[in-house]
Length: 188
Image 1: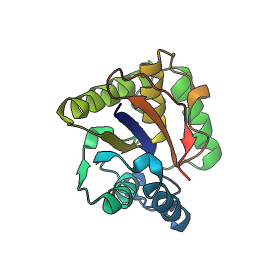
Image 2: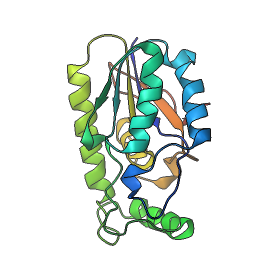
Image 3: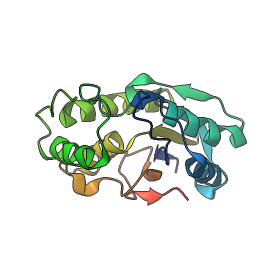
Image 4: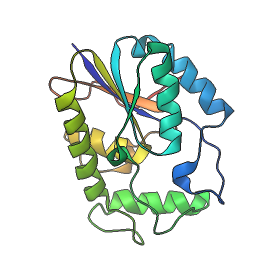
């Protein structure tokens, strides 16, 4: 049975002077992505898609290369739009993320709402799946929207309780039913 793999980018170079969408993977993130690329989980992947954000593209390139696959990009696989606040130090970012998940219909200081981000990621992933042929499908995206999609497909309410514990995780679902058969698992 073919699987859908929703994968988040691993560790990045955090640079407050660089737009968040342009942060790339750091050395640890690259090592983890390379180990995951060689794992059995990726063995039957026939298509790799990624968000247009650099950290997702970097991850997608690393995962697609050993399979000899091109990397497909879709901008609507991006993280929830937080451009209204830009970079936030970790403590403030965590509080903002708590608010984002806790009030899905309300924008936190101009951020895309969790409910809107969930609809966008669901629509985009459904569009990609409709065009997918055989084999497993790997989609590299981001933690918040990956969690929102998992909540939608598993029938759970939006809740940060279901969020990945850190960067560089994945979950799987049946490509036929779209029911997740795992929660977040570390990529390596």
